Image 1: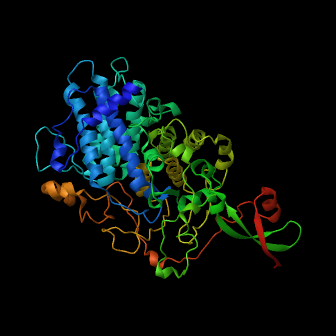
Image 2: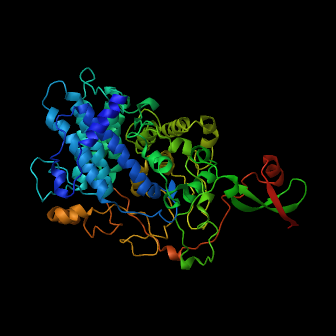
Image 3: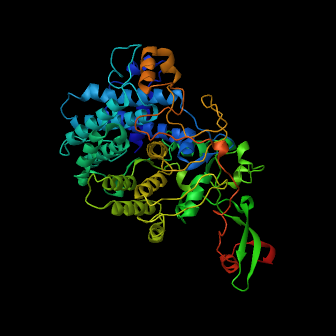
Length: 575
């Protein structure tokens, strides 16, 4: 393993950063004599680092699975470093594998693996920005006019490349000697190629229609070549060794960080978890220290008489809102939740999420089951029913978090079980609901969203934008130069970096034309998205509502007393 870490550091040491967009054509400082293994391991690690950092800076906020404290939980629209890292350190290095080894006997499979990962990286770029350079990017001759490919063209290319790369792997031939994803198992790489193809085809059905459906039907007709068990999950393991520690650990454990970047459970996911008695509340998040817990006022009946008791008690979990400011139209003068001491809100499960050696999950077994459920629900194939895949996906997620014993009761609830619905709860401002309809597709999407904790922030962003299955609250502290209202909805895309605008004017202008409007507008639509129906949030009726946290320890005084929780009796009265 120490040799693997050395190879990672060697590749990264020889990967130069670009200062202009024209440098994304070719990196003159590329370590051309590196082996495919060394290059691939460096690229996989940098991809994991890049996505983990984007989670902390942007996608945890966008997914609503976590909030960032101190007013920093804002909807960003990107940064130059993400684009440059993707093109230079990831795609540029992968290009080197193809350039150096595509025609060399004995390297066929390693080249196909590089093409699979290249498709994965491009899928992140096109899902983030829309039109991106692909056909004439990474060429050997520099150019100041690097043109952009439209979304449909990129997705069509990626689907075809993943099919060819998966089909092109011959498990009897060469493999990666060092492989931080699958330890040289070529069959698993074939499965990743096909599962990525299913993922992208489901994402771009809106814009590719029959082309996407054909890919879905093909992979669903041969499920043996999809991810089919937990040990086939695509992930990269970190180690508790300097240079190869999880980015979450580096930011939140090794480094001294301030409260303005603290990661906390969001009040939106908290309301969802409470609405459906979801045991992932305990699995995903830590309890709040007793001294900092939120105080609830509740009214409970008694089994002994017909009187009611007003009681107060503290609760072990609490979510942080993304709306730290009240809008004037709501008519609420004081916010009892936003603006609390940040220690009042629950941390992610630090022993797991912030562990130095926590692996980064790129594509999981549970996610694959939810994608199969969607494909089956669409009538596009599968050996099982959509409900069977869906239930298996919940089981796989619960097993991965060590809560399998709770799965049966969870799946039996209204709103979770196929063919049922639930009103859920309103959030504490009463402006959005966690209700789940009779539409079983919504159930599939919501479970897939919950499965993305904590690594799948980008994928959650894609899923939410594609389906609009969540009734998301507004963010009332935008602090973004591209958002002019006093509130913000989730952006539809990131804006292009300044390096593109400054150094590739023809390409940038063409990209703007392909987007069909002002690309600085964070709500301009990408083709795979369900259009965002924006609300005038200032006119949405609001009222403080704590029903989602009341009855925490039971529905009457006897259950409260039996729980052992400390409480204060304020007064008793009869109706």
